[in-house]
Image (cartoon, rainbow, N blue to C red; front, side, top):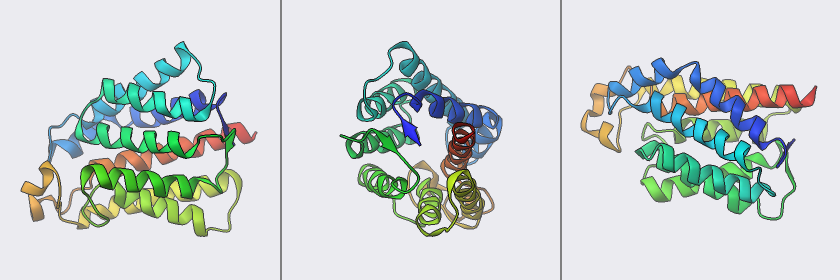
Length: 209
């Protein structure tokens, strides 16, 4: 269960998960982008963790809103801006909520995906982060698993979906210039989200103990 008190712990788990794959993310991004994805994800979530630790938020809505602003300040890249839009959507969706459980997460993710699509213009199948987020949300919505097992299963679904983007052609953003040449290479944003999902599962495991 996520509360305003445990939000910093969640972001720290996500930061740790991404930090261990910084080189991999950089290599993926270099194949069809600027090659700065690994650095931007590290900078973004480090800024988020610093923001929450320096001045703890009073509500989840405030916390996610400040996460969005901190991330965008530190990593104003294309994906950074899109992730910030998703975090802002979480902020709006969390208004009045004192806690978030796995049962509510798909609803929040649906709203976040809509915000990301509105901003970036991508759709499912365009070889973007969305192609990992949607399977993650769908697993959470349909799986009979509960507790940390549910979050671990969803993380595995996101990872499988991220790997499957290697069979897609890029249709949006800078990578669209490479088109079919990006086949055989996983989308960096999708892989980044699968790592975030692992961080969420790790958080769930630790907070359920």
